[in-house]
Amino acid sequence: MGNQDLTGLPVKVKLPGPEASGRSRIEKLIAKRRSVRRYKDRKLSESVISRLLWAAQGISSEDSLRTSPSAGALYPLEIHVVTGGSELEPGVYRYVPEDNTLIQEIAGDMREKLSNAALSQPMIRSAPVSFVISAVYARIAGKYGNRGLRYTYMEAGHAAQNISLLGVELGIGICTVGAFEDEEVKNVLKLPANEEPLYILPLGYI
Ligand SMILES: Cc1cc2nc3c(=O)[nH]c(=O)nc-3n(C[C@H](O)[C@H](O)[C@H](O)COP(=O)(O)O)c2cc1C
Image (cartoon, rainbow, N blue to C red; front, side):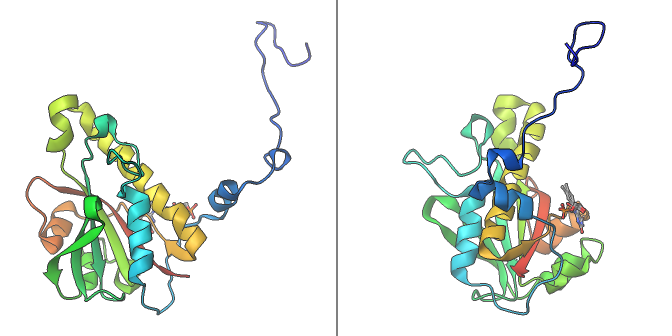
């Protein structure tokens, strides 16, 4: 009864481990993940870009469900790849999960402008690639109304975490950036009026 106060409720339970339960591969990745803001000056391969995008929003089932959970499987997120330091031609591309392709939307290196739109955070200028996760709320609002907003933010978190953990495995450093001017990012990426930027993830080899 040493664990109980006068109400009979337990007050403190010392949990085993975490070491006691053993360190699985995924626990090691979780433990190792840190925000990384400096990257090697080395071109990111298309293969690594593909794998990171797949981790975020790729197709992982025969009925087209994706790697991140999505309320009602309505998938409000888009991912844009902003690059000037990869095997891809410098530019901005939109990821299409259904056939694992990138559609070029803008030609030319937009990293400097994207950095300027994000309070001039230097790692967005220096990273070979930034992913920009954005959302089309209309896809989810029909079913969930305003609550769809929070579902969309939750999903962006799932996607960013999947990218971050695979990044640890692949030796790719990533920072999750929320501080930016929405309208400026929309202008730089030429996003449609109904699409809102949520997260910028600069990334590169550590
Ligand atoms: C929603 C969100 C927004 C963030 N925005 C920024 C940002 O704008 N710039 C930045 O350098 N780091 C940003 N971070 C990263 C945090 O600074 C970082 O996660 C925190 O310092 C803890 O360090 P760790 O990620 O290495 O554990 C953000 C993190 C989250 C979750």
